[in-house]
Length: 316
Ligand SMILES: Nc1nc2c(ncn2[C@@H]2O[C@H](COP(=O)(O)OP(=O)(O)OP(=O)(O)O)[C@@H](O)[C@H]2O)c(=O)[nH]1
Ligand SMILES: [Mg+2]
Ligand SMILES: [Zn+2]
Image 1 (cartoon, protein in one colour):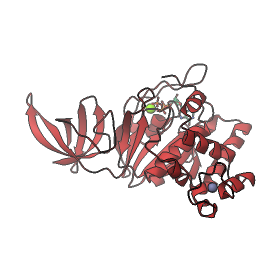
Image 2 (cartoon, rainbow, N blue to C red):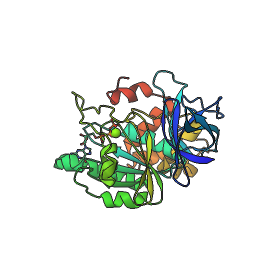
Image 3 (cartoon, rainbow, N blue to C red):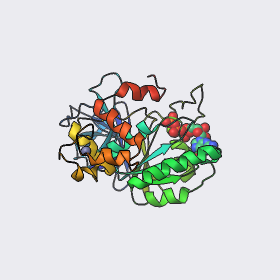
Image 4 (cartoon, rainbow, N blue to C red):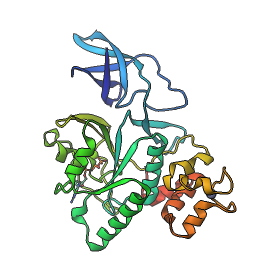
């Protein structure tokens, strides 16, 4: 039999077949995927082959094979730098929820997220959530950020998961697609799922503390079938994305506005740092490329994660 993994809780995986039947499945033996040292062998979104067995009078499944993944989003473990966790796989659109100050989302985080999406060729959309809470100055900042990312080619929508503002636009991007909501804890991912599909009643919680942090209310990724022919994966809040096994020369290719200029650099392997006649540096000087983007680029090149984590106020 074959189905899609909707949820994984420890050693059991919830798998739904094409005709909608749900089986609890476990894995036997080891699955190793070349090049990924992941803490979870099977992830939400995986298409798996399984056989049925009877387990205490209950019909359960044993996963025997994972079909090749079209793509996946991974998170690097903060402590064991080589360990990774696959958040979800086989995604059509990934939505990043961004809030300015409750909790704060920094451009370093947004840019790492976008690099990950570019590297795996997943369409990324930026959702500036909680716009019902911002004063005029904050709204200007959102406008500035949205213009910056739109210019690069990313779709940006200001939304409110509370008032429903612009939710129709989000829904239309989700139709017939497998989508994933991502972002820091407390940005409103589960609230947004509830707004779109109220009968799901996912657990949400108010942000708290001096730094206005979320409370990590959602603890594992789960996929839901929505009434308008969409699948959504709600995920736990994350602190950072690992940029996995990327060559230095490759990083600039995942900044679309840098990539576009690359051919005009004098050296075809230009890293845009201090090479002569670098079109990216020229564009930066002419303010055609944002400093925040260039800074994120340098941080990724240098693997400067310390700084990046500090900026997120995160201690794990
Ligand atoms: N005012 C306002 N509050 C919002 C909005 N969206 C979410 N919230 C609130 O923000 C808090 C956090 O929302 P959640 O949906 O739990 O956040 P989450 O991203 O799922 O967080 P984790 O599961 O911890 O990753 C809740 O108190 C929500 O009511 C919004 O658009 N406007
Ligand atoms: Mg949540
Ligand atoms: Zn260059």
